[in-house]
Image 1 (tube, rainbow, N blue to C red):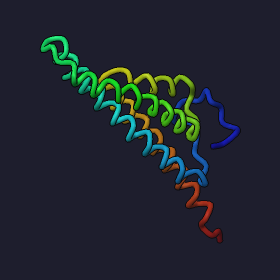
Image 2: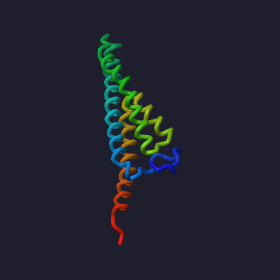
Image 3: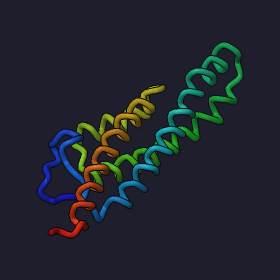
Image 4: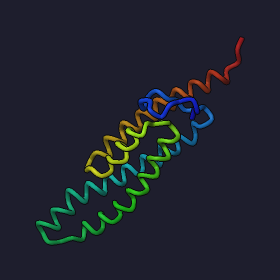
Length: 137
C-alpha cells in the first residue's frame, strides 16, 4: 500500500501496489469466506434458533449456531482488519464492515460492497503492473 495515501480517503480512492496484488487477493478471499460463514450462522440463529427457543422451548439451535457465530465473528474482525490495512480503508469504513457481522443479512451486503471496492482496486493495480512491464518504444 502506498505510504503517501491518507487513511481518511474514501474506500475507492487509494490503490494497491502491484507487488501486493497476490496477498490482497488472498486477504479478500479470507474475508469473504468469514463474512459468509458468520452471516449464515447469524441468519440461522435469528431466523430459526431464536423462534425455536422462545416459541418451541428448544434451545439446541441457539447453542449450536450462537457459540460458533461468536467465535467466528472474532476471526471475521481479524480478516476485515487485515484486508483494510492492505487496501487502506478509512476507520469509518472498517468499523461499518466489522459491525455488519452483528446484524442479520447485513454481512452479505457489506461483503458485496467490500468485494466490489477491492476488486476495482485490484484491477487498477493489475493494469498498473501490466503497463510497468510492457517494453517502451
